[in-house]
Amino acid sequence: MNIDSENIEKNRMTFWEKIYLPEIARGLGLTFKRMFRPKMTRQYPEERWEPLGSYRGRPVLVEEGGKERCVACGLCSRVCPALAIEVQAAETSDDKERYPSKFEINMLRCIYCGFCEEVCPEEAIVMSKDYELVFTSQESAIMTKEQLLVPVSELQDRLEFLRRYK
Amino acid sequence: MDNLTWTLVEASVKAFVILNIVLLGAAASVYAERKIAAFIQDRIGPNRVGPFGLLQPFADVFKLFFKEDIVPRAADSFFHRLAPIISLGVAISVYAVIPFAHYIEIDGTRYYLGIAPNVNIGFLFILAMTSVGVYGITLAGWSSNNKYSLLGGLRSSAQMISYELSMGLSLIGVVLVAGSFSLNDIVLKQSGFMWNIFLQPLGFIIFLVSSFAETNRAPFDLPEAEPELVGGFNTEYSGMKFGMFFLAEYANMATAAAFISLLYFGGWQLPFPAEWLGLQEGSIGLAIAQFLVFLIKIAFFVFFFIWVRWSIPRFRYDQLMRLGWKVLLPLSILNVILTSIGVLIFK
Image 1 (cartoon, rainbow over the protein chains, first blue to last red):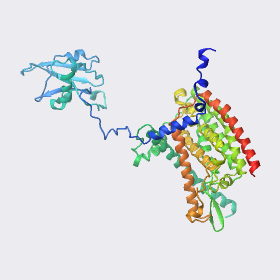
Image 2: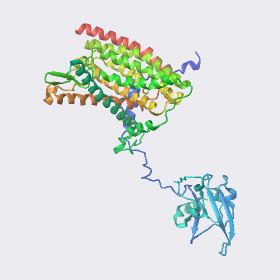
Image 3: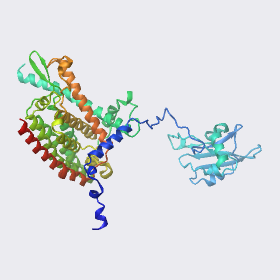
């Protein structure tokens, strides 16, 4: 008698298991109990989920004192694996000397990897908690500088997270 | 009006009412199925359309009505259209012989609640019609000209042949005990809590298992086993033709539930003497009470069907055949022999 012939369904199951009915009754009992457990469902449009600081949502530009922190070094654009970021630099009389005259992120290309945030020397581009991204056309998915600017006060969770773990 | 016209009018009114009850019942079971499935999986289930999502099945049907009706170019279009009509037509026609309550007596005339509950072959009619139902599925599978549909249709007919035998044989026990093929007689024999389940426990289990196979419900839903066969026999159906198969499945489930409660759980018989309610035999009040009791029994078995579907995984094809031929068939023959001996001794 070889090993394979011993490990067949007939030999694996006991008599009561082969009858099926007691096992089926046990299974039914289990599912019946589960019917009265608390539900896991989140009723989305009414109940929203608030992400933690570690969440990588829509990338945004940090706005401080009414202006962007960005100095238009172009590192984010260079590191972006999906080629989603376009930066054009210009001169300014401010301390930082350079600013982006054009800063666009194509949200159809963005893969939310967070490389731009990681490479940024000025902490000027960070990932926000915004996950509700809906566009009605390809053009509207390209976010301009004005759409990307978010006041620094709204990004404290993420900045705190970056200081601790980056 | 002469007698024949009057009979026809009476039957049409009853048919109209029963048709609406059946379709509403099917809608209610669709809702129940989705809710119970959700509860078992720790979800809430449909709750957006109407209060508690109660209008969800109607929303589903409206959606199906507005969907494009696709017939594959390679399909046999006549049979492709005929198949869902057979399925749903047969599922509904079974209700012609089901008694929903006993009778109402007005001016000495007895109005039975059911289109033809006293027909003396009612029992055979249901068995015959449920077997015809498999033609709908097999034709759907064959006419779609799709290998998965064809496999689904073939499985359905193979399953029907294997389980019809033990189902019929297990019911012989009920007929032997009642001594009649008329459904009303069978129900009347069970008065005073002498339900057939106590006399025929083995037959009941065989019939219950076979009716799961007969209605193509899990754990015997091999004709539409979606992981193996895409969608089974209804892969190539869309729009309301799919909707008809869908409604037929739920109407069949309700039929099986009604049949189980008629044959084994006393049908419309109240579980206590009617005198306790102070109602006369033949009064409208008693008929309503009987109808409600019958509905509760049906609802329980529909719940049971759904409960089993969301608890037990699908049987493998060879396990299904082994169970049908090697277990249920011998047991049902044994049941017939035991019942015959019992009837001989005690009558």
